[in-house]
View 1 (cartoon, rainbow, N blue to C red):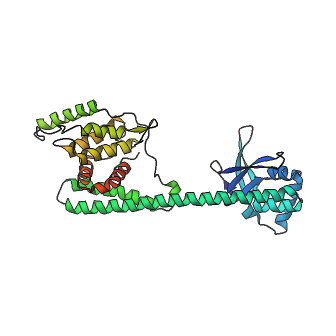
View 2: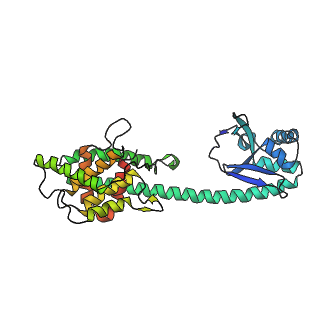
View 3: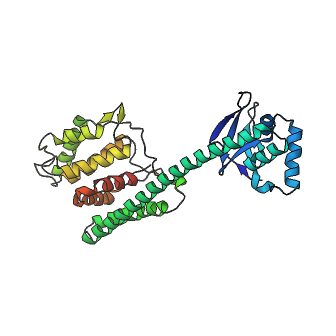
Length: 333
């Protein structure tokens, strides 16, 4: 007899016409399930009577116990969990006929209606999940194609090594998404605990320190980090926008990805937009304690970051959502 974990199994409430019976009915495997105690209450018969009829149903070969019986976990009043025998709709209907219960007919009509509603809704949910999975696969296919194109173009650049690393990491995600069991895929587990909301004054102070360091090494011009207009403030405002008290971009990954993309693509500074975007991206992740893997390694090393910045800079604006989705997945927890 199979054993089931029903902590997430849907439950419907059945009530008799006069309200004297009210019981929780489990829905699983395209049928409904009741325990022997519940069947006894439903038909107003002693448990021993129900037990006798169930034995006869199996002994006469009307139904096979293997396909119509299951054990479900039940937490008793003493707090202990027990495995309790349950029987599906076929058994319930058969017992109802044998005890000549009018309630049995009413329950069968109710159960069939509930099952139809549940299966239709379940089918719709499965269709939605499948559509989301297929879109993720298509998106990842487009991303890998984009990577391959840029790898050819950048074959002689040091950043190409970083691009290879990014491809390898993202290809693993692609393989996962090609697995059919979408229930186990981490498609939406982004980190919504935002410890640090980016501030313009602190960001500008960080950029100024970066400029001083790079100027001292002869790697930045006087124009590096100079704001052309108020567009940088607009970028930060966009990232921090909220509705109903909730961020429009609710996760660390989404805010960081948009920060990198907007700074590189919108060119708010006279010079150094790619380097500043990459710097702010890591700076923001560090502020939110989200820049390291669980083993302590950097989620994105310098070469990979340079490759991603170049990829964003060269991307078509129509690919914005694709690029943002890529970056989010690369820094997922």
